[in-house]
Image 1 (cartoon, rainbow, N blue to C red):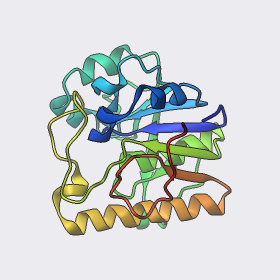
Image 2 (image 1 turned 30 degrees about the vertical axis):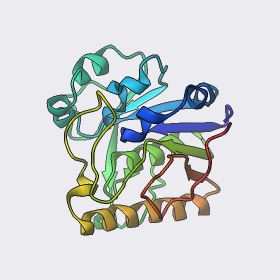
Image 3 (image 1 turned 120 degrees about the horizontal axis):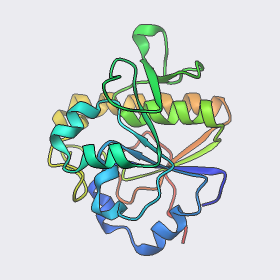
Image 4 (image 1 turned 90 degrees about the vertical axis):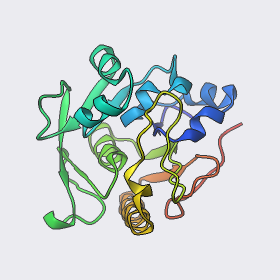
Length: 207
């Protein structure tokens, strides 16, 4: 992990089992980004986020304890979506998808591909706007039928776990993101131990 890598932290329960040395490595990243409930995860206590992202902050406020308090007090740069301006944020991103003629990646610096996950919008914006060419994910568990979260990050069920079809659809979205990112010279890897996502290149956590 180095200053050229952005680490995006999702809220999967695998965060609870990450060893201290993993978080020490994350601290060396060029940016640390919390998506959705990760900002409130107990495992992330003490992590200094560079960005926090929540495309649907209103729903998260209802399902993630302390979300509103942490969102309103964080010194990190906040990302939300256009259409949710009632949520205070530094940047509002326009979500686009196949209905807009976008397949996996938008080159519009103010937009992000929404293929079933706020993290897709986030990585698209982050690379376009901040120039990162390597992105690593943690807490992107996506185990079929298991949509739980790390302690503190909410008791709701993630949308991908609602059905096998939904999991397959979100997985296809990630496949498109990774393919289009690679065409632009951007490397995306999943460092999440035991992930159920098969359409993103995987890598081991640095030791």
